[in-house]
Length: 261
Image (cartoon, rainbow, N blue to C red; front, side, top):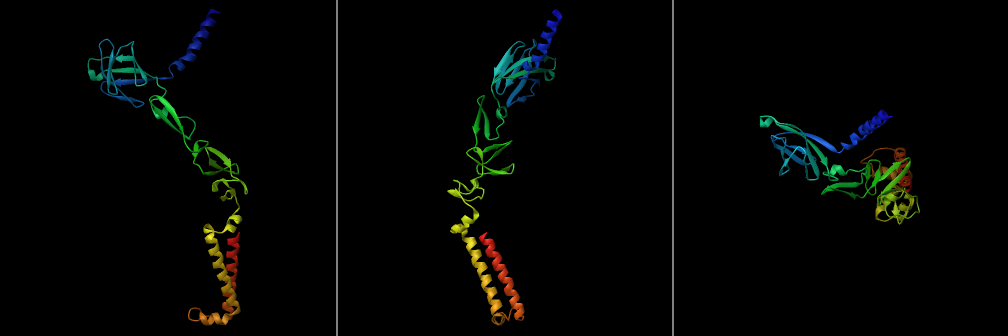
């Protein structure tokens, strides 16, 4: 029983040992060769005969004994092994550095939310919410539309919503399946029937196609007149001009159908 208890204590100690040292960092320094720890410059100036170390942290100089500790700029520094030699440039020391502040650099504040701006300020983390929606490891911008499992979603007010069918209230085009919003979602046919400036290209297309139709009919009914009018540019008999008229009518009809659908 005695040995079993001892075994349990040793096992428990081995389990918690990594946790005790998890928040510390070992750093080896040589004289006048500064190293950086999360934006903090640490330099070994010299070693004392009795094992003390003269350090410089950023612009602050200090002395650290074997059993002492130095708390500065959000970190704690302790001495590990000290290697004292007769030649100053060969002296080195092993430092044990522990972070005391919640953060030292912005990377310490990273969370799992891609729609936050993570900033470290005076040792504290601040997470500023950005305008967008979280989708896996991406932050979608407001108004962005994505396809998820055969459904289309839009990003608004920091959340994803499914696009709306026609006759549902809306504020923006991207909220609608048809991508047309006029207080409510409307179909493309409804939008085209409204006319107005944004429909000007459609009316121009209808007028243009109507000219094709009229001209094609004239080619078929009055081929002689067309032939005389275009004699200097195009030579051909009545059948040739009637074929041109038929092609023009087909093109005109196709353009009208395209404009109205």
